[in-house]
Length: 121
Image (cartoon, rainbow, N blue to C red; front, top):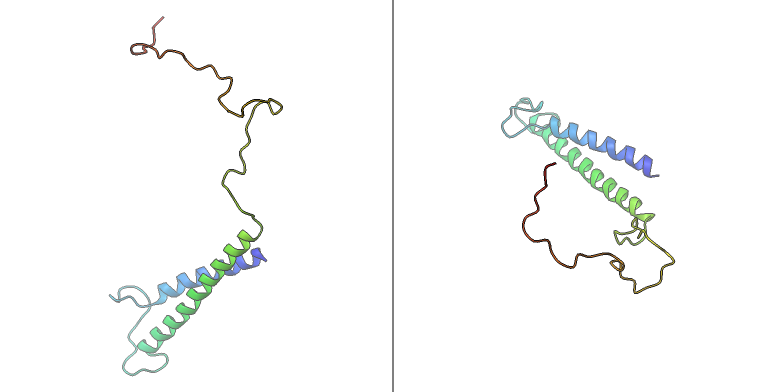
C-alpha cells in the first residue's frame, strides 16, 4: 500500500511541477502563456490560465493528501518513541551496585599544574 501511494505521490509531484512551469508568470517571460486575443472563451489566454490554475489547485490538494497519508502509514507501525531505543549500556550486566555509571572509574585526585607541553625526544 505504501509503495503504491509513494508512486502516486511522485507522479502527482512531477505533474505539479509541470503545471507550475506551464503557467504564465507575472512578467510573461516564462511559461507558454501566449496571447489569446480578447474575450473569456475556454481556451483564450484568460480561459487557459483559469483552467491551469484550477488543475494546479487540484494537484496541490492531491499532493498534500498523499503526503499526509504517507506520514500516517509511516507512523502506523511505530509505537511511542523516546529517541533512545537503539542505545545499550556496555559493561557487566550481572554487577550489583548503586547503579551509578561512574562507579569504579579512576578520577584524578589533583589537577595537573601548569600547561601540558609535549616533550620532544
